[in-house]
Image (cartoon, rainbow, N blue to C red):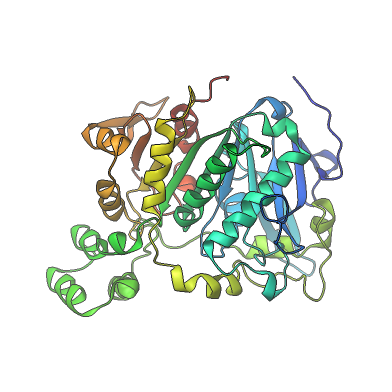
Length: 422
């Protein structure tokens, strides 16, 4: 069913898009959603930028809301460089030419895909320093309110299932956000969000437990020697041990089989293009609205005191909440790229998962590991340990940016979350 929707946040064209008339395909919305409202009445008078990329039948499909990490990193990383609808390239010359092309394996080919650029002050979510949240909890309350405000504007999206997904520091962002949604759904008068899954990819969930596995990962992969491991374990504090491993080895820690991250430079130039700003209903480029980096230094500073706090207890609470839900229960999916040597490597992930208690965690621990097969070639591309509410997928040939390295992850996610009609 096709829905012809024209609203004040509709995106119809994008500069540089290689389609006739630069017209976007499907239904897209972009703009700003206030972080202040019924559940956050004292929030600042500022909004998070959002971008929703759906299909023509978007009003009948689930939506995956993606976030990158940081703290304070831009979710345009995902949108333009990993799993979102577009890629940006720039042909250098006297007058650089920007070209936007559809991503070959974009997630919005399967499901509606959305980002909120959060917290306030990250790239084009403009805010004064005093408006920037001081804690993760405050930032997630503002995110939740912005999501509610967006869904109130688009009730056709609100009536369908929602999946939260993100990587790295999203392991800190998403559990409290999911908890806010669960709690809000239980309160009379609040917009109900049909949350079906929270997906934590190479995620920063229980930092001290995870960092303790860094030298073991490095030694077991031949990156450091036994003597180097012993010296690091005895003399280097955990928050900097990954950096020391990188200095010793010269390895690209985000993916030991690769050399570097994709460059954000073309995205930065695109974000500072007035044609782009007009298309997505953002302020034009000027003093205070020029994007100079792909993360927020203010957010990073504000969140530093709690950057190593554990949110594993909230994962446990979400599992306990799901045990008491109705027919369609929220699932927690944990995904690890086996080539990720950072603090979020699979060994540390296994450690925090093993420390979970409760019925769902116990059932998960009893589950055996099964092969995850390519749907066409039938080759082994990963290994899954699956409980009724908690699953862990370890992905071959994938690193910290697992969704970029293995595009089939969106198919795995959609097949693992119960999306049946209510």
